[in-house]
Structure formats: structure tokens, C-alpha cells
Image (cartoon, rainbow, N blue to C red; front, side, top):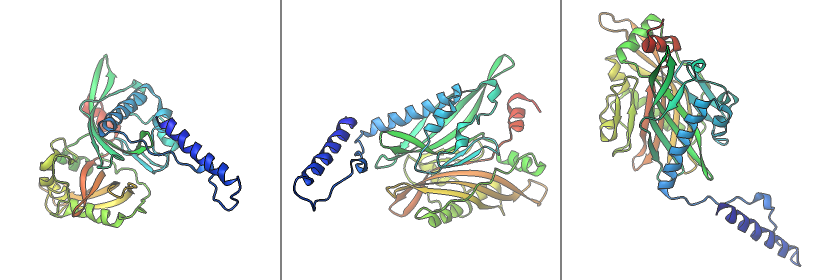
Length: 336
């Protein structure tokens, strides 16, 4: 169907050009190469199915080591941001070459990525989609298979007849108390820095919104069933109407805590109705009971926003700590 539409559009252009050449020297002509194929109209349920299939296909590419195929599934128009589990796993840019390398943890063991409960949402006009899945990251270890729960959120945009990835955030959940302890002992590394990019329309408004979201009592979170809040610990995975009742990140770390944005990258959909952000955060919190010494905890955050009647609202937020592979091994396998 798409091919027929393209041929019909091209034929109409060629016909009008030929007619212009038969006696009307002042008529405008069009270069066939400039003709853009019209965006196919796809039912919403098909778009959802296609996005689910795209996510699962990416899991397969990574499990099989098809990293060039994974990279081909990234947006060529929008700069991408890929945040992995470990502190140094950050890939940014337009179809970046680093996305084609093997970034998997425990890659020498041949891990397999499997979906456990994939959740998919689309923007109202169907041109942007975002997902959440707690993957089963399976690793062969000493004759058995360890299943590591990895939280994964992704954002895609529609590129004519396929979904392409713009943002990805993978994490391993750690409790707030453990984060304080690991940061105080120097085990918890700060996430790798990246260059900020905030050229999209409304970027300043979104930066201010995230600052209020983490520090103040205002909760600009979308109402209804679509919202999702993921905080660093496993107990704070909150869906739907309860998301707006979640305490701020500063409040959860304790009195006197402040949360600041260190680096950020912002994008806005062509429709102007959906936006996204990836950020490095700095939490200045108390080190724990019995001491007032502050400790800085580096976190990562990704956000998806929709424009509602009152302005931008958060529909998905994913906050995590970047966990060194050695610490993850200690927790999963008991190895130092």
C-alpha cells in the first residue's frame, strides 16, 4: 500500500512537470526527489503491537550479539541518549558509533535478555511511544542460570513505518539506606558526565519542572492510569493515580536533602505535545543515623512529559543509581 501511494505521488509530479514543459514556460516544476511519501495511517492497536515487537526484537539483537542491527534501530534524526546499568555506560549523539559495541554486563558469559511484563504507552497522536519492562537478564554462572532483575524504560518515535529508539535507561534497584552507605564508603561511583543539550522549545520550563518535582511539594504528574514513577529502590515502583502521591526524592532521602541537576539532554516531539529528558542528578543527603555529615549521591533520571491543560506533566519518571559491576556481582553472586 505504501509503495502504491509513493508511486502515485511520483507519477502525479512527473505528469505535472511534463505538462508544464508543453507550452507553459512559466509554470513551476517539481523535482521528483523532493517528493515526500505521505505518512501511512496505522490503527492505534497496530502501532502498539509494532512497538512491542520492536522492543522484543532489540532484546534478541542484544542477546545474539547483533549490535550493528541494534544501532540501526536508533533514530537518525533525533539525538539519542542510552544510559546503562554501570557508571560509565553512557552513549549519546545522533546514531552514535558507540551504540554498535557490546555494552552488556557479563558479556563474556553470554547473557540473554527476556521480557517479563512489558508496558507500552503511546502519545495521543501516535507518533511517540514509551515503554517499561523489568527484564529478566539471564547469566550462566557455575552451572546454573542467574536471573538479574533489570528495570528498563525506553522512548521511541515513529519514523515513517517503523519505531526508532531515542532514549533508553536501564537500572538495578538499590535501597535508599544502601545508597547512603555505598556513597559514604566511596563504593558508589558518580555517573559518567555528558554534555548538556537544551535547545528544544520549552527546555527551560522542563528543567524548572524537574527541580520542583524533586525538591518541592508540587507534583506535576499526569492524573489517571498512565503515569509511572520508578525511584532507586524496589519499593517505589508506583503506577497510575498513586504516582501523584509519591513523596519527592528529597523528602525520601530525609530532612535537609537537596537535589540538583548536573547534566541534562532534552527533546521535544514534532507535535509539541510530548517531551523527554535524560539527566545526571546530585543528591546532597545526610550520611545516615548518628551523623550529620552530608554525602553526595550521584543518580540518573529519565523523564517523559505530556502537555496537559495546565502545562507539562510527567507521565514516566525513572531515577536510579549507576551500580559498578563489582558491586552488582557481590549482590548477585556473593563475589568480591
